[in-house]
Length: 410
Image (cartoon, rainbow, N blue to C red; front, top):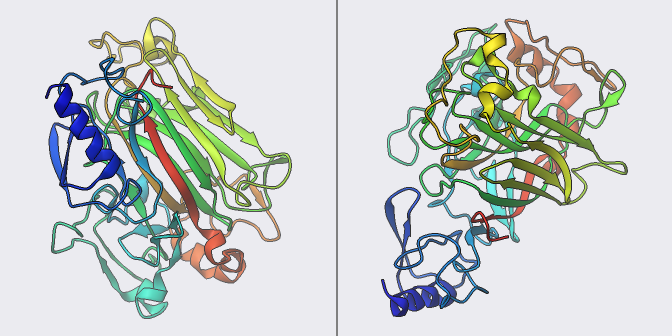
């Protein structure tokens, strides 16, 4: 495409008065959208073509507008764009044996007044009552491309309830851009309000599109923000409830060598908590380091050094003879040098340690043990304690906007 073609493409993005074909160079796919009424009508994946294949664009490009200004993705949630945000269907609990299952239901994920809500609800509300948890069958296999189970690990596609092994007592949502947006390096800005309610676990994070270095965590994970919804939760006297948010990178040759603790940070709000107002969560990802900030305050910064994450993790000494999965990459940031996609979800509880048994909750104790074989049941039977803390939409993760900028454009 020449300069004239680029100009026409930009006019389409701005005016959106004709059919627009956006070519996502990161996914090597072409996606055709219907006629759009405004730039805010749908999430906008803005891509480069012709003489402008990477930022910065040709000098003739208008640097005040996308894609020339480096903005490659934006969603302000005037509508719920299902082409961009794929719902996951799974009860697997992400390996943490969490207490929710994920589906596509407007009780759990919806857009209103320019805000996306991800709100957990009780499974019994949509399955005929509490008997379903101990005697029903939860099948997420699906029968069409839009509702197929997305995660069979950990019995994620089908669960059968028994008197001891309850079906996941919470229904929630997890959204991802794996088939619509993948990018390497750049800046992500998210305006979000954390949910308030005991044992809620919101997250906005990134996973690799193709697992180029192997299974988790060898190909990496970037958690822009996670939080715990409890109002009165402490760890050895330090508040770790909804007045605290954390940022983490997961990486390592194998699961047992996940070195997240070397790339983790958290911050506490001095007045109030993160569920009272919207705050800005920012990821800046470059070929040399990753920085995550909350309201412009740096929470976590990771620079592995010139020899990369294998040396940074000291794996040669910690696990001698362990193969370096990133040794053939010329980039010191490997595994964080490939395409990642965005995920947003609200989980609940679990036995993986995020709500560890050492935490102290008030006015009642944690209702399950991580070592319990009946943790979902134990959690559910304490519903009279925790469910009153889930106050309507205050228990929802709320997102005002997400923007992604090409590296070097900000």
